Length: 594
Image (cartoon, rainbow, N blue to C red; front, top):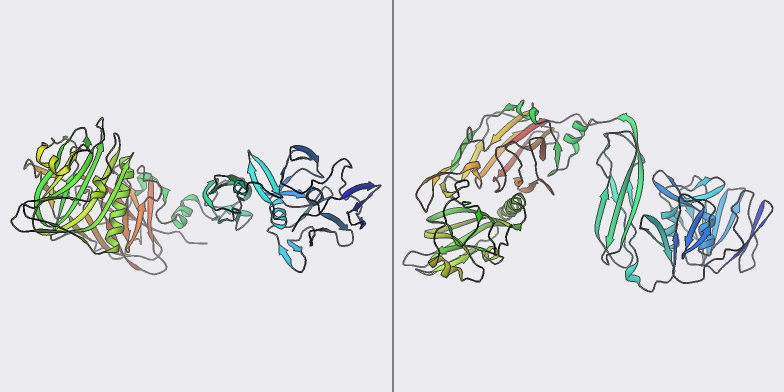
């Protein structure tokens, strides 16, 4: 609807006569809103109106304007008086006492509001508001957001004040986005899922960021709960909206029931740490898979100087894990170098690779690396072939070595490779300005740190076989990485020849295909401390957790839920660097769904 020219208003006894510029007389019924004679409608141009919810005075273009009513809040929605809004934006307004309808006109448009009705009758069409118009202390009130839509105005929160802007804008790039959302209901029971729909939009730009507060998936305390949404557009302009929902003192689900039923895949929920230990432990058999060797370069974990962190000569299928944090006083580059010790050209087939970091935290780096590795593994893309002439060397994974590690930063890599001939693999730590191939020839081997793991380990792939029928008919747990039922890999340090144990089985590839009962929740519970990683579930990557980590034994991350029938579900688990083992896979019957 477009703006109309200014109007003049006067009060006559209990009646109000509105006289538009056209000279048309419009009669108001008793109790209709009246205007002060010293207030005039603003002329065409850019205007900003600031609402007040404490007194009947608004601020228009820095001037105080009397309003029929303060802005009020009903059901989480802000309402404003039709009479005031019509006057300030230059529309004519009439009230029909017989039908109790308020009619506004302007710019060739006409709209009719009626208390209790969602429907706004327009010029040749009807418009449905999200909430109905109401009457408050003798004033017709409409949701301010619906008014903004009808009048093509811009609604925004600025400095904790709700503002409405309209008219010509000299700098359209500064137009605030419209923050808005809806819930599927106005009232909820305790533990009832709440659905949120973001209805925000950005005139002339796009929304690039949204921030929510209070938007819980369900509420477990009765009363009114406020939800806030703030959006930022591509020009950096912010706006926000606040709404209130009511939670009844009636229960649909307990917190525990809700968490198990509705926590999204990849998210976490609270768990009584001792309850997992009360679940029956599932027996299983580890079946080693032939051919895959694992190389782990994690000692020294903290790099303080240049040198060769690990080195060994190997052939066949190899998985490599490199995990380091720089504690040097300068930048350091970490290179994976392959040397051909033979007399004929050597071909290396590079498979799935995941690189995490540089990052500030070991858990962040480890989770990112294993997530990207599993994503690459699931895609099964054509491998990259690197050919190395006899007696020469080449840097593998230049994306890793191309970004130096700054002091305090962490990087993690996982990569699979295959070669039919022997290859000498070296993890070289050098100054970024130094040629890595020259550094390989000149630098000494770094000593182990006595705390972490480096070595070469056969049997890097394991199949977990569980012969217990359907899982989840009762609470059960599958324990991985405990060094007892699931023994750690044994190997040797390729530099010193010392026997080595792959503590935590970081980098081991576990695969399992499990029969899971109907209506069962499968979750991951960290038992050795915090855990941050990812799994493949039926070929899809599920992070543990999405946007966070499992911080302790009192948290569990959702991996899968079965439906109304038994399902055969495949899992791939590779313990991530920077996290603690063991972990428990939990199988829990789901509560009945209301």
